[in-house]
Image (cartoon, rainbow, N blue to C red; front, side):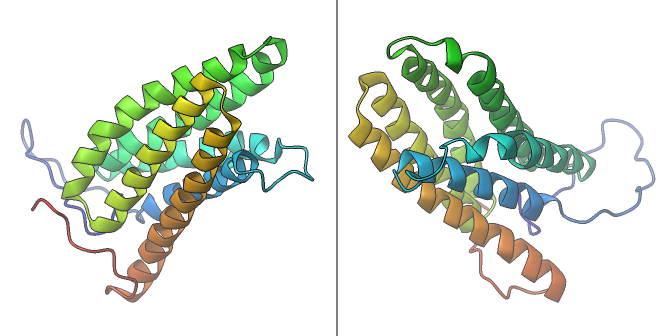
Length: 208
């Protein structure tokens, strides 16, 4: 998820000639994640009271889902297993959440929908935990994305299990911070890639 990440791997057999160089897909993946997270977090935080509350849904498929999944596939092409795993998984998260909202949520009764969301977020918090640990080998900006996302997921699954609107609202506010951190990291990838130097600092990895 970083232009500075080492993308080389030890070949299992004879090395093959390198293919065409492609642009770093990480800024796209981060931007797609940030925007969709912002839209849903604005709903959770109570900022979108005058809207339908479903403005995030289309973008869960088209941007946070599809564009992030494509970024993950291009990271496979770049031999970046961290970026490929992160973007592909969270692209699938947004698509899956969108399908749940369309197919399952309308039939939910009581607080069963909240419990569905809680189980989904708990499962992704498990995934995010080991990706947070792995992000210590990328850079501080990427680590900050996974750290704020981890806090968001934990607070939201607690709030949804408990049926606490106040806790969900707090999770929404932290989700907004997560989106801003991801947008900054995306912007850094674009600008630093354009200029060929660190215009927007992303920090060094904790583990080298």
